[in-house]
Length: 271
Image (cartoon, rainbow, N blue to C red; front, side, top):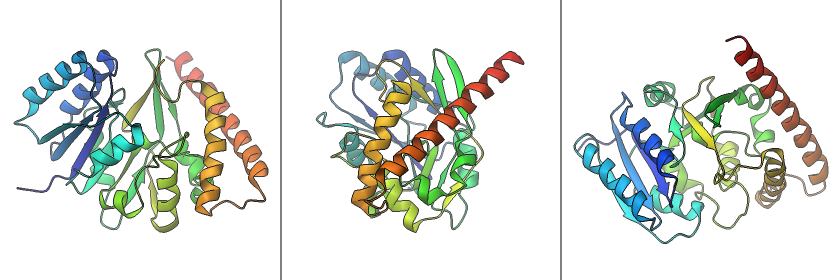
């Protein structure tokens, strides 16, 4: 059997039905079909299981779908368990409440990952109250990727694609942290692997009552503090400068948020 180009990972734990339906439908509509879909369900309710069963039935002859269940022990554990089943060249994590931006998202991602490229990241796009807002995060990251990724998870994991073997090589997602479970992985990868920045969007992050990023600036700042702790443990942030780095990152984040609000406001007003 031909090796799939993409392994798409989705972990579910009682997501809102409308979000899960949208996520699965966005994958079904992709024009790029050389994929496998790995679903790790943490013993969800009956509604979730019915949606998944119907999805599998509709698509089982279109692309391989691997479904299994594990105990609910946190998102990092779920992602790591699912990643072990991946056989594709590349891996992407489609959360149950997010969705692909358009039908050619995977096709474009594939075109960017050429020989010698091990991982790419695009801009950040999120949906809030049925409106989409874009953040040109790659323009900020390109200033100094190593420094920025050593203080905060600036890159959008929804818009990040990597070679599958990198998950195991760099230890996967951190299962023992309260903050961003992907930051440790990013820190380790950025030290050794060149990150390709792409001025494009692939996947939309949904902000809602149950999303981990709800809470705006307050939660973002808490994530920065946790990120500084992880960076210190990884040896990429001097212990004598945590407060200075926190203050600098806080200012950078606020400037970015101001830019996003102004930019998206102007876009809406021009329509």
